[in-house]
Structures are given as structure tokens and as C-alpha cells.
Image 1 (tube, rainbow, N blue to C red):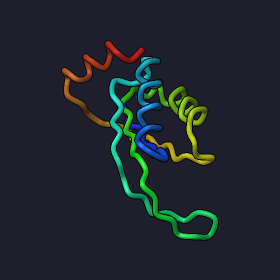
Image 2: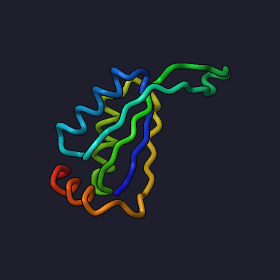
Image 3: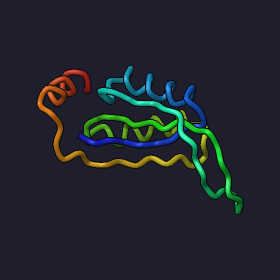
Image 4: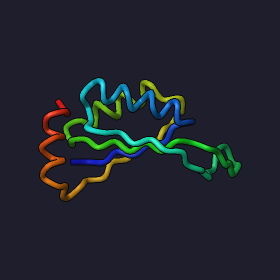
Length: 101
């Protein structure tokens, strides 16, 4: 299992990506929540309200999910990062194997 993290310009965009990912059976669950981001853009420090997006999926879905995000994301350069999950509970793993294809 892997967790993929990205941010979106707002919760609406995050939910749109989440629905696309789930409809295509690419992940078992996608969490979307509001966040406050501070970053440097074009030489200036910026502050924005964004949405954090956490995707629970299988390693085999990393590239298809990255492609989907890039094709449907408002940002020119979205961050897409993945973290390997060493262990998950058995019941969740079984359910995930049924819903992710």
C-alpha cells in the first residue's frame, strides 16, 4: 500500500479529483481537507487556503493516479508525492483488494 499526497487550489477541486480516482477504481479512499499553505512563487512568499488530498492505494496505481492528477489539476506544477506504508490492518487490506482494480 502507498499513500499519495497532493494539494489543490480548493476543496472543490480536491473532491473532483477524489471522485475521478474512486470512480476509476484506482484507490480505496481519498481524504480531502482544508489547509493553509505558505510557499515561494515567482520570488515572493505567498499564503493561500488550499485543500490537502491523501489517496490510499496500491503501488501499481501510482503512475495512473499521477497521470490523472496532472491531466485534471489547476496548477502548472502540482506536487505529487508517495509514501510506502509498511503495514496496514488485515481487514482494511482485504477490503482494499476488493475495490481497487
